[in-house]
Image 1 (cartoon, rainbow, N blue to C red):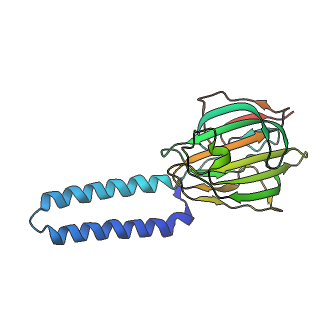
Image 2 (tube, one colour):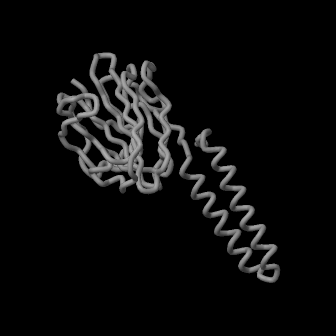
Length: 219
């Protein structure tokens, strides 16, 4: 277990602000040691809670090019057939994973291949389980062409709390199953669009973990 490196500047700022608030309160309320102690306890609890958002577990997995692993930790909130009209322009099977504030927020590459499309879209911040969030919220769309020529689209979606999406890949990159895709600050949702021939292995409300549970198998 370790902490997401890119979160360190933010964590330092948060720690400094919390420390400053405590110092000011102690100076202002010199005779209220009890309340100062309560504030200190709440501050430590809050910081540990925030720190947990950026935890990265040590997790091993077996590489398998016939398997599509979950790109995120969370709960399956959609498993349906849809028409993907941003890049694929065809009917697909879509699996959506909702990441709560208690889940690990790092996203992983679900399949090896080449990144053929990557685009950031500004947008709204609807609740992540709203079906319209996939098209209206701020989001990053990545398409990976597998070693067998299949196209897998992964969409990182911001939510009502999540206000920053980090995506570490760009067009032309060669990626490996299990590599880091990116990070969504404070949770949200990840959609995966798969070819029609994919065999979905999850159902609604299933709990999945990135690179530990497969969401589909390819023929």
